[in-house]
Image (cartoon, rainbow, N blue to C red; front, side, top):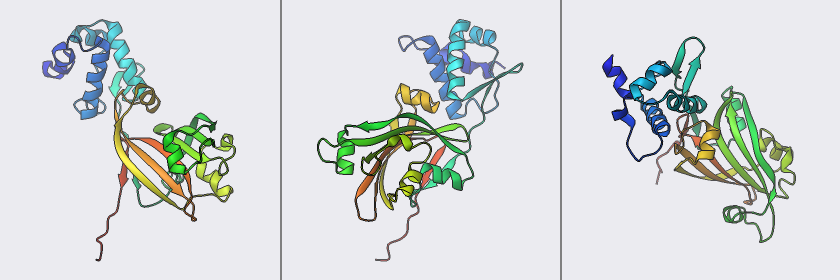
Length: 253
């Protein structure tokens, strides 16, 4: 039993000068869950007992556990206690097909939804201006969304388009590509660049992940058949759920 509790003892997680105790305990438990050291369905000791083992106040334990519940990695079951939630099923998406988030979730039989964070006409930033070839002084239509599948937040997406392609960003709710198809402006080709980044505090909260968690960033520029770039989307995708798959073929030459 003592070995089982060693994970919670202060020598396992507390270091002087490295931040408040609740923050250090939160980071330690989050990392232990991520590594599998705290396996799915593991029950945490009750709050009073955990405070004694960790040599902290019950308020410190409560703050750390509450953040992990908000992150979606712990679950408090009425009358039973606090448990590590089962790992979410991973989603594989091919990089060889140009599909919107909504289209892909439809194919997998999942219900997609979006929370609009901001949308409107703005002055373009340098990345948007270069990707879309916008002249100086021309505005850009921008839609910022938190994307869900079956109520699980999976991605943050910032989509930017020329105003003649999307004159009214307010019409975009769940699917941007549905809107573009209705206008006869759907792209047929895209170039994507993938990198790994760490989340800031605001984005981490939206995706229900710990501050600084690693995610996949995809910058996509999409083109009409004429070759005109009409969409620049920057997305942050949860690496604990998303796998992007690329099929490679041997060049006959």
